[in-house]
Image 1 (tube, helix red, strand yellow):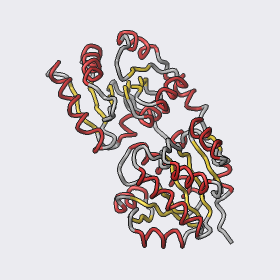
Image 2 (cartoon, rainbow, N blue to C red; image 1 turned 180 degrees about the vertical axis):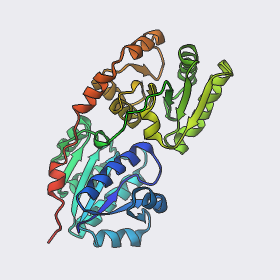
Image 3 (cartoon, one colour; image 1 turned 120 degrees about the vertical axis):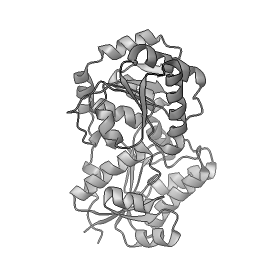
Length: 336
């Protein structure tokens, strides 16, 4: 049985990264691959995905696991960048370097590369990725960066497009998904709260906290804003069974890319809050309305666009996206 090791931002209970991990583990298991995941919370990861899991900073365990594996899969997500932290880039490149040192196959899986500002970090990434067996990246900007580095890479869609979602149950609920980000501001929250109360005060409102460390306090703040405008509005914060609950919504107004992607796949009418270029691009491709972080839109116009969205158009768009596993699968043979 082929033994694969997965390295990424796993165990932190970030919705997008965990959704990618779910898709990846499911695909590997369907091919009979034995899976081990490096995780910040090995118990959670092992129980959630029925895999072996090793603490990500257990140096002996990490090295030993790589040494006894056939293949390393690094990603998805934005692992190779030094904007969030140079330390994290050093960690993920160390994992890749160790696998290459032990002559293991290495796949860079659906990653967003960069920004990488440190020249030494650029040198490390460029020279490591040239020796990987397959490099797949998720956006044109990353493709251009790797082309400049002289690294051959393949552009793929987000693997969460491969996620199987059910849209058999539909409610009248309205979902709000916010994340704490440097451009988050009170004006946006206030305008959004007024909009929700004005247009949807007769609905059940669910505020989705997709990563407790980043979302929960902001979710509480927004819930209190809604209640201060209308104390009778029905509102709750949701932090579990996220995918099932998103697919049951009538409408989702959200920031995070993968929350919107899951909604689109389920045919949920949605509006993007544009905090990042990847969200803007998804909104453009799926033809859904957008609210900017400075909230200068006409919210009546946003409401009309939401009302006029057709679920079949969203489902049709999602159906045009298919993750290409062909080159990935061709590498899943045990090394001699």
